[in-house]
Image (cartoon, rainbow, N blue to C red; front, side, top):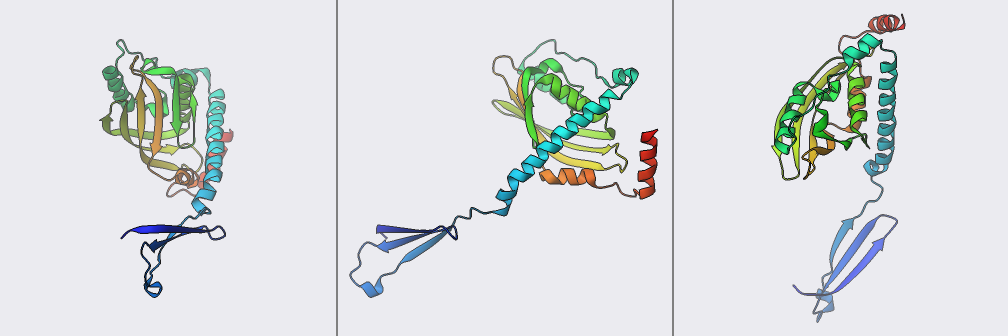
Length: 243
């Protein structure tokens, strides 16, 4: 059917847009049909409204955890600090194939939580991003990973699948750990990391983590005591830490 007129009526109070289509030939007014299509344009979606607040909370929590890791490292003895510091790993030959291979090996060393990664597989100003925020700097990433690992009792990280694309590789992983907090929360998630390779050096210049769980769910896991944990256990652990 051909249409010659389009009338658009927008009602801002209800966030609706109404489109009226009139037939091109209108010989009989009584038989004229108006075809109306309602387009819902809801600008007050609760999820959209809460998104800035959620992101702000995540950034505060992320920077707080970074500061907590730095503070924890300051209280470690020199011997513990030396033991916690991972060895310096370097590639002899740097190209994309060798970088991909060493990333897979770094997964076996749980580099996310140990900081035990091959340093020259990444650019010094590599960008590291996750659901909470992003920053640039290889040494900062290494330090954060090492400090985070010092807050764990036990952790496992497995590379489940690797995918190669023209400009990047994607590693799909599964991670779980027990945090060494008095209530021993269990953090468990799956996700994937995108590794963007520089076309000239072959090194990773962007490292982007994606978690397959809602952002706030991760923090709820941290706040939830592990199964079988009691108030007595909580007090006992705090007393041990305070000595």
